Amino acid sequence: MFDRKYCLVMIPALWIVVVLMSANSHLNACTTAVISGRATADGRPILWKNRDTKSGRHNEVVFMQKGKYKAVAVVNANNYKTVWMGVNEAGFCIENSLSRDLQDSEKSKGPGNGGLMKRALETCATVADFQALLDKTNASGRTTVANFGVIDAAGGAALFETGPKEYAFYDANDPKVAPHGYIVRSNFSMTANQLPANPDFKTIRKIYSSDRYCQACSRLISQESKGITIDYAVQNLTRDLSSINGTPFPGSINGAAKKLPAVIATDKTISRTTTVSAAVFHGVKPGEDPLLTTMWTILGDPKFSIAVPCWVATEEIADPLTDKNGGELGEIAILLREWNLNKNASGVITTHLPSIWNDLWPTEKQILKQTAQAMQTWNRDGLSKPQMKELHRELAELAMKSMQKELREMKQIALSMPAPKPPKFKPVTKTIVVP
Image 1: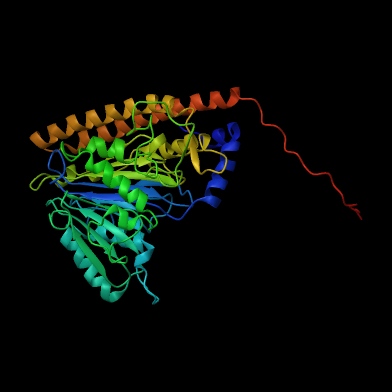
Image 2: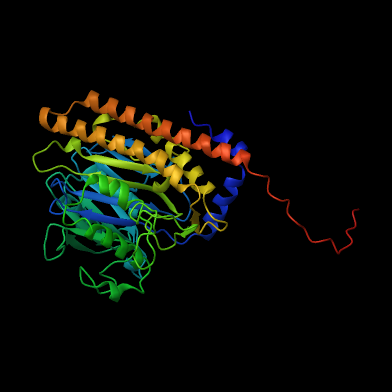
């Protein structure tokens, strides 16, 4: 089992970097996409979110059973009043990206972004249900300022730009609204900026987070001819490292097979130094069992972590993903990332990235392959809850062992490095009188 105290003793310098990152990071910076079955290789909708937050919050996965629908969701560790992405037993999935430009001038009361998503998971089965919830809370009040992405088991896929008293609806199944079959958002809204549903990249370049919006669009455009797959969304979207002009850095997941630059600044990239988790939801086709809807969960920075499939039908979460101090798998990912940050936590030193990726990504590919084989069987023969529960546990443990191995290797590197030079202090020029 992962021992947090042991890590603190072995590598105390890492926790200094955590403090620096919290102090210097930009505001919450999530990147998301709603992808209809029109654009995917298998005809099933996909929903994606990279969760970024300036506070460096620790995340865990929880099972929820107090509402009309049971659900699994990613939450801030030990805080169960809000949800940041999740799926329920009806196959309804939801996530969000903060969009402060949707705020109005009047004071509002009611659920905020995370509170509304929790209520939605507990009460909504379809995109239409969520729209009805928004209609209801338009009158009763909300404190939301977010772009909410949702998919359901009936093939619904939509995005709602949502302020405290109104919202705008974008249907990913409507070719006029989403000609490519998907809708991307970062941290701005088309509504507040009086933009069309698909603005030209040049018209939005001065808007905060437009770089990530353009990069996500570019990554999806590159897959249009063959159809977007769940593997691509999990492995390539969540870990994209691209320059401000949208070109992936060489040596990175989407870049040319060349040497990485020494340091990658991440203030404009999708995968950032403030990314605390990611989720990719793989929906079902109409008529398929909604319980087959999968929440691929990556705790911690996706560049340093492994995706694990989560299902509501298991009715419990494997130990590496859930803990009031943060899921242990994600805690290792946090340590791995802090070890590789530059001095002011504005970028990633790439020296060890190739070896980390060579170790972790084959394990994730194995997890994706085993899950795909099981899903094929369950779609053909019917869902087996005991099998699903065991597979979830097995794959979480597989990911954990791989992450633990990587952590041990990182500690060995830390122990072999020379001790840092002691700090230099200015000579004391005052006479200090001690009574």
